[in-house]
Each structure stands twice: as C-alpha cells, then as structure tokens.
Image (cartoon, rainbow, N blue to C red; front, side, top):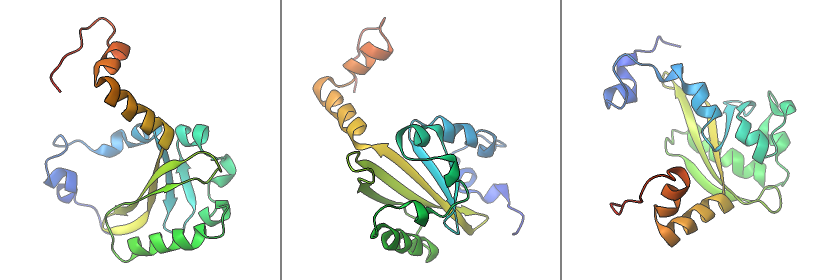
Length: 164
C-alpha cells in the first residue's frame, strides 16, 4: 500500500474535520458507543469486530471473530444475496446498501452495509444495524409531541421550545 496523504482524505478536502486532527484518534470509541449495532467484516468476509450493542441486541458471540460471515447466516438464500451485495462493492459501488431483515424470527432490523476503503483499496465492509421497533417508537413519539417529549425527558428543568 502507498503512504496515505492526509491532505487528500475526503474529510480534509471537504473541510469536515478540524485541521490536523485524525478521526482514528476517536474512531474505536465512536463505534463502541454509537447506540447502533456495528459489525466490521474484512474483504475475505471474516468478522473482525462487533460492538457491545451488537452483542447485546444481535446474535454476536466471541466465536464469530475471525469466522466467515457465511457460516453465521441461517437461511440458505442469505449467502447468495450477501455475495451479490459484496460483488457490487468489489465492482466499485461506493453507496451503502440498505435493507430490512428478520434474521432472528421476530426481531426486524434495518441494515446498512458500506464498503471500507483505505488508501483507495477496498479492505472490508461495515454493517450498521438499527432495531425497527426502536426507530418506529421514536418516530411515533416525535409525531405525537414533537421535541416536547424529548425535552421533558432529557431536559426536565427547561421549558420546551417551539422553534422546530
């Protein structure tokens, strides 16, 4: 691999990061406390990381680390779909793939899979998971009272504002 020029990183070029600061300084903590499931898979399809949320809400176990994702899919159709999605990324797709799944029978999850490029080389994939029930409950709560319920819960000593 070539030495990366930090001046060419998209976050630097687009001025979306403080000058001289490297995201890698906090990246592992961002993943661990993001409040969503995060699983990282290397280019060979092996699980290399999952965060605590994924452990608590999904089926992630220590034995998954280093194991091929194919070995963890329960339904026969899942692996061909997974392979087709990864092929899109290998062919240059940069946009994430989003889908809804019910891998555990009753829990519906919202999934976003994205390619991970380092120094212009595809090195793996990230999978971000939300629970459909949690997202729907949050949207219903917002539709019912806007920010008021959030402000009451998070800022109990304040008066809700009307400036949406």
